[in-house]
Amino acid sequence: MIEQLSANKSHGGVQGVYRHASTATGTDMTFSVFVPEHEPGATLPVLWYLSGLTCTHANVTEKGEYRAACAEHGVIFVAPDTSPRGAQVPDDEAYDFGQGAGFYLDATQDPWSAHFRMRSYIEQELPAVIGAEFPADLARQGITGHSMGGHGALTIGLRNPARFRSVSAFSPIVAPSQVPWGQKALAGYLGRDEAAWREYDAVALIEDGARLPEILVDTGTNDPFLEKELRPDLLATACAQAGIGLTQRLQPGYDHSYYFVSTFLGAHIAWHAERLKA
Image (tube, rainbow, N blue to C red):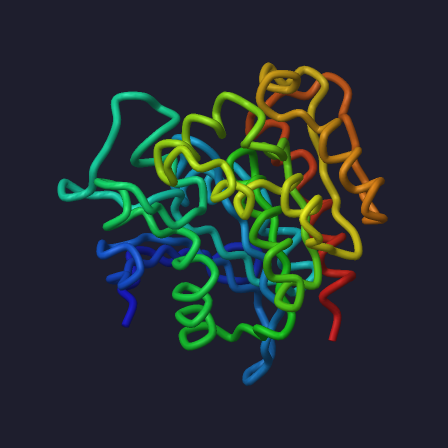
């Protein structure tokens, strides 16, 4: 059962925010869903959007400017939170670890393992909720995300190629095992055995045999994290060696913000919609 926190008409459809008790995380979880106007009884394809560090569902919901494109193409847009939250959930003083920084993995280390199970939440629990509560065609799903959420979109897509017809990302952390953000998170949540990190690293997954037909990635040339944390060159090399069709665009002058994401999110939605046709 889900609780509706808000509902607003937009572009002919309904933008809602919802809360439910998650068994995966052991907490209440909040998410947003935009459902375009549609014929009674019809079902629509679903695009998942995973947000980045420090974000909640609200960042893209309020700043993403995606509803016109979703209404045009008839795509449901689902935006989960980035981690479990609450007084009972462990946290860290740093912005890049703990609440708001779930990295879309299932933690194995104390005290994080009790609640930080975002992989199970995104891959299993929330899709069942969306399928039960909304006019969603779960045979037609795509996934995208930004920064840490781009990491989540790539890794979840690579691990579940039969589920997702389309995978894209904005400014993704493509090889967390090789950059400071990822090394801190993976060691903290999963321990020091780097072999356990590979299933949460897009480049490592590709090296280990995971395949997708194609991937779309946009990153800004003025992104301050480009060379140290994002490393799009590593994804380009991995995809080239694996024969994965990568469209990777470096957008001149754009940074890491939602000014960048909102500029190109409509184009990503159109790209996904083309691949999610019945």
